[in-house]
Image (cartoon, rainbow, N blue to C red; front, side):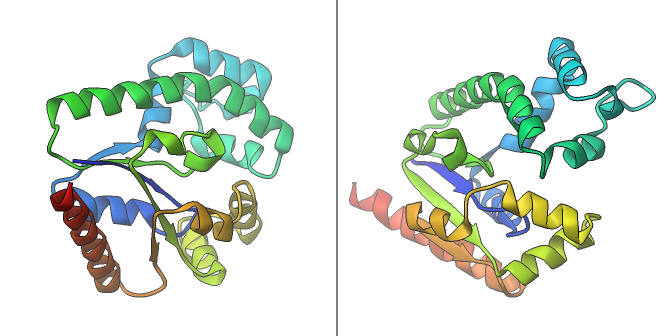
Length: 202
């Protein structure tokens, strides 16, 4: 039916929205999972990261230490630029292929790409609609620190993306996630209802 870009800054809860959408039969394509696949299935990519950033990003088993990588790139413009140059071209190619495959196989299903950097990557025009999830900064920081980040690390992650209010202005739909899980479920259902209404009018 539609291809939706689901985005929002760190700590807003967009992946929770993706989980709710999946329960309503939407097909979810995760930008994070696609990025992991690019690294895990392409040793040359990991080798480039080690060479350009640091061999500190490797675990003893020579796999990527994602937590260490995050600490070295968030808040460090140059390392983030290097990471993006290596990862983004194959990642975007893979995302586009996944969208096409799912659209061909499931022409009547809603396809949702859950990705934090849709605007930063310049791919908003891939989608029929953009759904942005937002939340107050204090709530975002609380969620991020509960997931193991320090306040400094959480602020660095938030600062690594364009401003939340900018994303809101660029969105077709916005879900504010400052409340309970039930509130988020209800808001997500209203979004789906609006989509179905648009689809029925086509």
